[in-house]
Image (cartoon, rainbow, N blue to C red):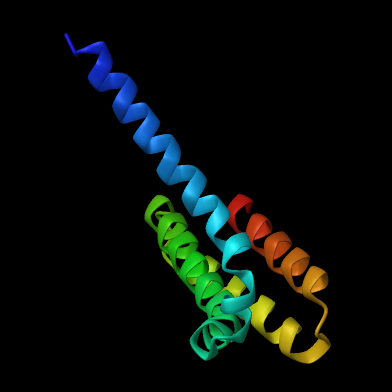
Length: 106
Protein backbone atom coordinates (compact mmCIF):
# COMPACT_ATOMS: atom_id res chain seq x y z
CA UNK A 1 0.00 0.00 0.00
CA UNK A 2 1.19 3.51 -0.74
CA UNK A 3 1.86 5.97 2.08
CA UNK A 4 -0.94 8.56 2.17
CA UNK A 5 1.50 11.44 2.79
CA UNK A 6 3.48 10.44 -0.30
CA UNK A 7 0.29 10.21 -2.38
CA UNK A 8 -0.91 13.65 -1.26
CA UNK A 9 2.53 15.17 -1.98
CA UNK A 10 2.57 13.60 -5.45
CA UNK A 11 -0.94 14.88 -6.22
CA UNK A 12 -0.04 18.38 -5.02
CA UNK A 13 3.14 18.38 -7.13
CA UNK A 14 1.19 17.29 -10.22
CA UNK A 15 -1.43 19.96 -9.56
CA UNK A 16 1.23 22.65 -9.18
CA UNK A 17 2.91 21.67 -12.45
CA UNK A 18 -0.44 21.60 -14.24
CA UNK A 19 -1.44 25.04 -12.96
CA UNK A 20 1.99 26.47 -13.82
CA UNK A 21 1.87 25.10 -17.36
CA UNK A 22 -1.63 26.46 -17.90
CA UNK A 23 -0.75 29.89 -16.48
CA UNK A 24 2.56 30.29 -18.32
CA UNK A 25 1.13 31.65 -21.60
CA UNK A 26 -0.84 34.29 -19.70
CA UNK A 27 2.05 35.29 -17.48
CA UNK A 28 4.64 35.39 -20.26
CA UNK A 29 2.24 36.62 -22.97
CA UNK A 30 3.96 39.92 -23.72
CA UNK A 31 7.37 38.34 -23.96
CA UNK A 32 6.05 35.51 -26.14
CA UNK A 33 4.40 37.92 -28.60
CA UNK A 34 7.63 39.85 -29.10
CA UNK A 35 9.90 36.83 -29.43
CA UNK A 36 10.84 36.07 -33.07
CA UNK A 37 10.99 32.29 -32.60
CA UNK A 38 7.49 32.19 -31.16
CA UNK A 39 6.19 34.26 -34.09
CA UNK A 40 7.91 31.95 -36.57
CA UNK A 41 6.45 28.86 -34.87
CA UNK A 42 3.02 30.48 -34.89
CA UNK A 43 3.24 30.84 -38.66
CA UNK A 44 4.39 27.27 -39.40
CA UNK A 45 3.05 25.12 -36.58
CA UNK A 46 -0.68 25.05 -37.45
CA UNK A 47 0.08 23.68 -40.93
CA UNK A 48 2.55 21.16 -39.50
CA UNK A 49 0.02 19.90 -36.98
CA UNK A 50 -2.67 19.53 -39.64
CA UNK A 51 -0.29 17.55 -41.88
CA UNK A 52 0.65 15.25 -38.99
CA UNK A 53 -3.01 14.70 -38.10
CA UNK A 54 -3.80 13.96 -41.75
CA UNK A 55 -0.96 11.46 -42.10
CA UNK A 56 -1.96 9.76 -38.85
CA UNK A 57 -5.62 9.53 -39.91
CA UNK A 58 -4.81 8.24 -43.40
CA UNK A 59 -2.43 5.59 -42.11
CA UNK A 60 -4.88 4.53 -39.40
CA UNK A 61 -7.74 4.25 -41.89
CA UNK A 62 -5.59 2.43 -44.44
CA UNK A 63 -4.67 -0.23 -41.87
CA UNK A 64 -8.33 -1.02 -41.35
CA UNK A 65 -9.12 -1.04 -45.08
CA UNK A 66 -8.38 -4.27 -46.96
CA UNK A 67 -8.95 -2.43 -50.26
CA UNK A 68 -5.74 -0.46 -49.91
CA UNK A 69 -4.77 3.17 -49.59
CA UNK A 70 -6.36 4.56 -52.76
CA UNK A 71 -9.65 5.66 -51.14
CA UNK A 72 -7.87 7.74 -48.52
CA UNK A 73 -5.51 9.26 -51.06
CA UNK A 74 -8.37 10.15 -53.42
CA UNK A 75 -10.26 11.89 -50.61
CA UNK A 76 -7.14 13.82 -49.59
CA UNK A 77 -6.52 14.81 -53.22
CA UNK A 78 -10.10 16.08 -53.57
CA UNK A 79 -9.76 18.16 -50.43
CA UNK A 80 -6.43 19.60 -51.60
CA UNK A 81 -7.69 20.46 -55.10
CA UNK A 82 -10.92 22.03 -53.84
CA UNK A 83 -9.08 24.03 -51.20
CA UNK A 84 -6.53 25.22 -53.75
CA UNK A 85 -9.18 26.20 -56.31
CA UNK A 86 -12.01 27.58 -54.13
CA UNK A 87 -10.36 28.49 -50.78
CA UNK A 88 -13.57 27.27 -49.12
CA UNK A 89 -12.42 25.14 -46.21
CA UNK A 90 -15.85 23.86 -45.25
CA UNK A 91 -16.63 22.86 -48.84
CA UNK A 92 -13.28 21.08 -49.20
CA UNK A 93 -13.64 19.12 -45.98
CA UNK A 94 -17.29 18.23 -46.64
CA UNK A 95 -16.59 17.06 -50.20
CA UNK A 96 -13.55 15.01 -49.17
CA UNK A 97 -15.45 13.42 -46.30
CA UNK A 98 -18.45 12.63 -48.50
CA UNK A 99 -16.28 11.06 -51.19
CA UNK A 100 -14.40 9.01 -48.62
CA UNK A 101 -17.59 7.76 -46.94
CA UNK A 102 -19.12 6.88 -50.32
CA UNK A 103 -16.00 5.01 -51.42
CA UNK A 104 -15.69 3.08 -48.19
CA UNK A 105 -19.36 2.10 -48.16
CA UNK A 106 -19.66 1.22 -51.84
